[in-house]
Image (cartoon, rainbow, N blue to C red; front, side, top):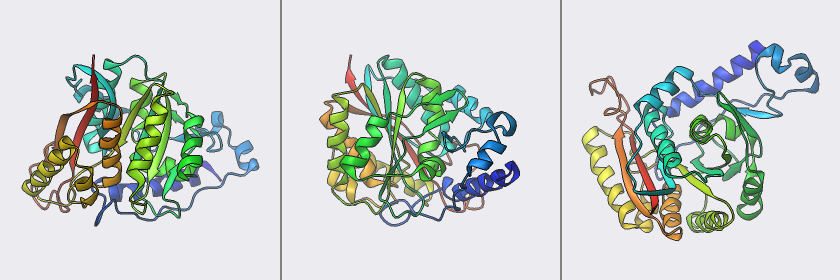
Length: 325
């Protein structure tokens, strides 16, 4: 495969992701769409196109951060806030839409500011693309602009053996819900390993309890930050989004996981992931605090109109679970 052909494949994947970056989901959970077929690199291709000559690392070794832009990343960093916590951040929720990249940056900046012992970031994110598997992970590490983000294979192996997750390098790389977060982890927590778990909307209703139990078990062995990549209300007018955000806020702050698990895409794209965050926060003995909230209209610079926002707005929250110093 020539570099030109690889770039065409990359462009196709990014275009596919762009269709869901502005809003994802239908019904009770995140909408899935088709991915382009993965490139298969032969030994001959790898030998022909070395990293030094072709400017990339073969996928047989490292996954790419496909949605990273150096210019945009530094804007997110400059716009971000270190949130007031008066405690150590144990787990957190942040968006995966890069329209709210400063929210993602703020979450990881705050976690790094409150703790110097994070050895692994466990990232739980929705699956936006069709797959035969309801849970996906990868043992591959990521190449980032800030160095290699090494994967904690002990944890990813637990996802496989304990939860039945499939190892799917392609899904882990191409779904923006996980890969969009990786550069932030590498930048703000450069010594931390990563472990990604992607959750399909087809997953069973007992996932939040099973997953929160496993994550709590992991917390007793490792010093982790548990990060949940979640977007909230979709396809609504700003006032409608605000009303649904109020419902979501009340359910999260009251710990009402039953209500959260019944939410549709009008409230949150991945109810099971949000419920897992709430359940895990309780198991860890932490307190959930709301750190930020907005939507594609309020975080941008365009005046609201249906022509500017033909599919309505997507809402974002940053929730932090902290334990007092």
